[in-house]
Amino acid sequence: MNGHYRQNIKPGMLVDIVLKADQRTGKRTRGTVAEILTNSASHPHGIKVRLKDGKVGRVQEIIS
Image 1 (cartoon, one colour):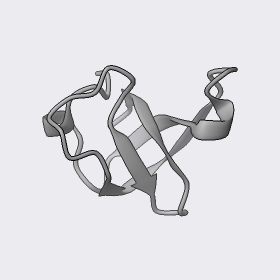
Image 2: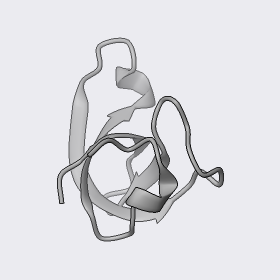
Image 3: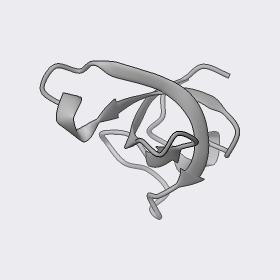
Image 4: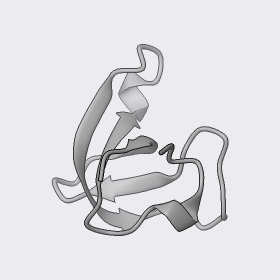
């Protein structure tokens, strides 16, 4: 499932995100969602979240 819709993402989910620094390469970082930062219902580049380890990025794929 992709991470373009806020309704699909809940705190505690395992997701792959792209950090701001990795946007050019598309390198993904896996982690657990701590907080959803995007307020709108959808975003073409993915919903922005903060992971439990403090990293912030846009969700590319929902793992579970």
